[in-house]
Image 1 (cartoon, chains in turn brown, cyan):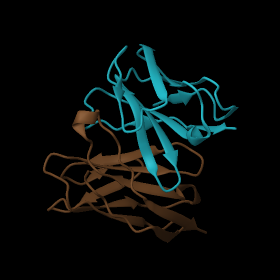
Image 2 (cartoon, helix red, strand yellow):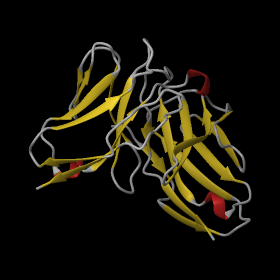
Image 3 (cartoon, helix red, strand yellow):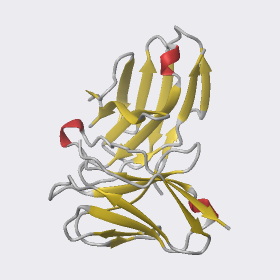
Image 4 (cartoon, one colour):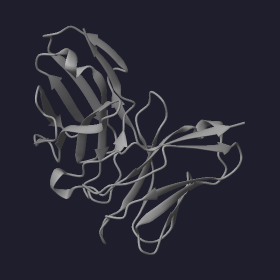
Length: 112
Length: 114
């Protein structure tokens, strides 16, 4: 299975940008990188995904390095409600219908 | 908006009981999944389904079965519940292009087997 590496925890001040890094050095050329988050006692929430180009949606931006070995999720103006565990997901395994492999994630604490 | 609904947030059952966990999605998705999530073990895939009446085993199918009689509904069945099946159960769905379509999750069912 492809592996992803994330820092275990990060803090961010409310209103500032939160930049969450992820290393995925074993990713291959046609495999996407996905980001999810999980707020305590809730199911994981999809945030964004990308292949090569940077992506932006209403929740976040995703910056993928040119060699695709790492990416950064950016929450432009973090709020207290963004406190959660953020998961950078390795590629789907096609022969198992797209199994998600969650690592330990980064626990983001947004502080007033 | 995407909606995956699991029938119960919290459930308490006894050892040996047959337990049904229900999941409904309103997005007309072809793929549906059942995971369990335990501290330190992450998400583990139990079963998934590509289409009505189709099912595939995931990593940990033992002690579980599934049913998909309608496209929008995917049920997880614990044939004879055991304490080792105490866990958070998560249902997810995704559109057919499973390599590039995100999975959307319900809020989970926290199941306790006594």
